[in-house]
Structures are given as C-alpha cells and as structure tokens.
Image (cartoon, rainbow, N blue to C red):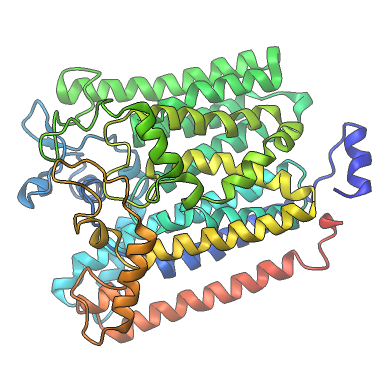
Length: 505
C-alpha cells in the first residue's frame, strides 16, 4: 500500500477508484472470462445431478412444471414421486429457473443455425444450457474484483486477485459442467458485496439487507443445505456493525424466512411433509446418501489431504487466503468472518456427510462456493506487495491453473467410472489420484490416431458437437466468434488498467 493510501487509512478515510472505472473493469473482466469459459465448456451433461436439473429446466420451459417424467423414460430418475404420482427432483427449482433464458436461447440457436442435423438438435440445446455455468463462473470471479475494489484495494491488485480466483480454483473447472456450485458462488459473493462493502460508519442499510437476503434465499432454492451459510452471514453483520446491524439483520431474516417458508410449502404441496425435500431413501447400491455415516476424520482427511479431493490441491490460492484473513479483517471484520467461517462450517458439515465426495465430480465439489468466499482474503494480502506474496501468488496460480486444465481436458466421468473412484459398495476410494490418471488419459488420446467414441477423449463442446454430426463450418464460426470476443475484450481490459489507471498509484 502506498504512502498516500496509508495517510488516508490513518485518517479513517477511503481512497477508491472512480466508481465508473471499477464498474467498467468489472464488466470487461466478466465478459472476457465468459468468452474464455464458453470456449472451454464441455457442452454436455454426464452425472445424474446434471441430468436432473437439465430435465427440470425443460419441464419448466415446456410445461410450467417441476415434474421430470423424462427421467423415468430415460431410466435416469433420482428423486421421489409426489402426491399426484409425478416424478420430482430432490432439489428446489432455483437453478432450473435461473437457467431458463439459456434454454430459450438454445431453442432459438438450433432453429436458425445451419448444419445441425435432427439427431443433434437436443445435444446443441444442452450445450447452450450448460453454457450458463460459464456465465456464472465468470460472474463469480468478476464479483470478487468488485468486492476488492469496494474494499479500497487498487484496481491492479483487485484484477490480479480476481484472475487468480477465476483461473486457479474450481471456479474455472466448474464453469465447464452443469453443477449448481458456480451459481451458488455467485449468490454468496453477491450477498457479501451487498452486506459488507459499504462505508463502515453508515452500517448496513435495509436495502442492502433485502438484496443480501434475496441472494441467500435463492441459494436455499438451489440446494437446501446452503442454509448453513445464513447464520454465519447474520453473525458477521453483528460483528461488523454491532447494534447498528440489529435492524438490517432482522430484515435479512424476514426475507430469507419468506423464501425458506415458500420452500417448505412447496415440500408440503408435493410430498405432504414440509421437511420432505424429495430425496430418495436410498441410491447407489442401497446406500443412504443423505445421511451422516462418514466418520468425521475420514471426511476431514479426504477434504484436506487426499489426492482426489484436497482443497489445497484443487484450490491452491486458499493458501494465500488463509494468510490474508487478518489483512481482510483490517478492512472489514464482518467480511473476514464470513470468508473464514463459511468454509469451516461447510468443511465440518460435509466431512460427516455420507456422500461427502460429491458423487461423480472433480475435487471438493460441495465446498466450491465456500472456497470462493475464502479467496476474498487474497486481494488484501496481494495489496501488501510483499515479495514473498508475489512469488507465492505466481506459484499457486500456475499450480491451480494446471490442476483445473488437467481436470477439464478429458471427461472426469470417463476416468472415474473405470472403477478407480468407487469400490463395489459405492464407497469412495481415498487413493484415487485424478491428476495422474487424467494425465494418462490425456496422453493416450493425444497420441492415438483412432477417433475417440462420443463422450470420450477431449472433453470440449466443439469436439463433442462435431462427433454428434454438427457441421464443422458452424462449429468453426462459433469458435471464431468466441475467440475474437475474448481477444478484443482482453485487450480492452488490459488497456483499462494500464499506465493511465491512476488508482494503482
């Protein structure tokens, strides 16, 4: 932090970049990352969780219903029959509702683009719907920039920190698939932005509390387990503003309570019990997935040091974040509490969860939104400009980017369904080492002259759609458009934060 900044801090004042500058950088960063993530999207669903939400979205768009009869006909049903005899997914309609615009766009694209054969029409539609995750991941990374800027961190350091989070953590990897974690990361970060980045002396306004409550309430409708984060946000509000936070905290509780109550009414209407969320009693070989049968230290070991799920291996920037928590606390103690406490709450909760590994997926799936919050401590640490921080930041960025790239290059399901991931009783194999096995898979396909079957090999949308019969000219045109957009937007972004940006002085 420069001498000028220190003088402002000593006076209790803030020296922020002009609001329009921060907003324009935020928009350019979001659009740049979205272009990159669209290029690297897989374009298809693999797991039962992805398929189920895909069916939910289709049902909402075509029938105005959350029932998923398609799952029955395709023998991919995971959920429960409601009181009307209709198959229901075990999730709220949060993610399916939010991605409806992508479904509408997908139907429009497949209707107007040439070179799409009849047998590939649904595959193209799915590719567009799955692209929603690219947008959510890009928005999550861009929101971290906006939070850093609102914390009076220089534009340059804010941008570097956001890029580290966007490209060296599972925020990048999960941009490629249709899991709910990128959307929840957006909702958590949006709540943090609303509640903890305003002037400390003014406290938290009722409007901020309403917006933060809406974000957290929608997260409940994505997965009810995100209730875990709400008490932490509430306590953080009180830690930050003390008596000034009582009224906004009550406002937030009311907003979240309304959305939570609506969810419970939905459960009662469908299943006759407000606490019945629609999860089946058993799955995968008769296992009770939604129980807490994992020994605590087994789950803790898996999340911390196992080669297939370690948070330190799959999200190396959290090492910087842990060191940066005290620096974040100096800027906003409420936000620091959220960044530190939410990951711990999720870690301790899911360490006991029966399916703690997250099903077929990459890395510590259930912890991804919490890790995005933890990484909010990266920016304040980078702002110190200590030499060891710079060197460490480069190292964790390169390591994290490498891990995400390996995880995305080939299908994780192809690797995991080989028997290396689960044993015959559907228990996770703690020795599963995806970096080694997926590198071998990547080298195999890179050196093989035989084309890989559909769904195998290089796991990108343009490869997948070409195998499905979409005209190569159409694919090339989309690729070119995305690549040009990425180049143009990145150039604009770099120019925006170049030598003329006086906020980095």
